[in-house]
Image (cartoon, rainbow, N blue to C red; front, side, top):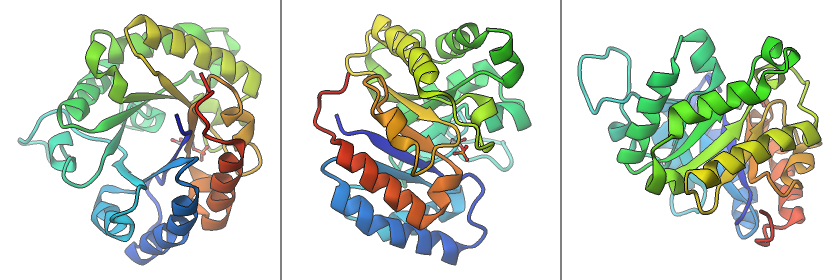
Length: 255
Ligand code: 13P
């Protein structure tokens, strides 16, 4: 399966013109590499339509960064997974910034995952430990708990779930996780997914990924790609990343 590079733009860029320009600059590179790398751009909700318009007819994916679990209702400020389904193919659920800044619980994340799948979207579920949990040797326990809470019982739908392992301490800090250690956690995640019946589990790494280190992760047999934050906002850097990952080859012999 081709490795996936998913660009989580977070609350960026600040203007529509910049969002369109970024998509326009990345698109040709992603298009050239598409036999070997799958690329998805995940802009803020309000730029989804325009970014999808730039990419239309391309095999470049578009996604949202969050969704609500109800189809509709009195939830001021929210956007439902059902509403997103006409505009994009992907949705992120349970990003640590949602869990941390907005108090999202495991139960809410589970409902969002379910709603995303029911709406026909592919879900990128984020899991990962905070720094103090890593220091206390609790990485496995935290990740196992988050995964179980969000995915246990999904069975047949697991094929549309990609799990992104994002150690919270590595996000936006420039302190990317040691690939070997991240690989061990990703192997554990993979094993859990297989245990629940996933046939081709996809596990990404996220956290200070840049053009210089992306292949350190994608080169691991357990790693199916990266969820990229800051570096995905720099057209040149993200393009270089796509090209370097393409050179690794999406030749199907990864685990
Ligand atoms: P950075 O790549 O900026 O560390 O962000 C990672 C992330 O949170 C992607 O979802």
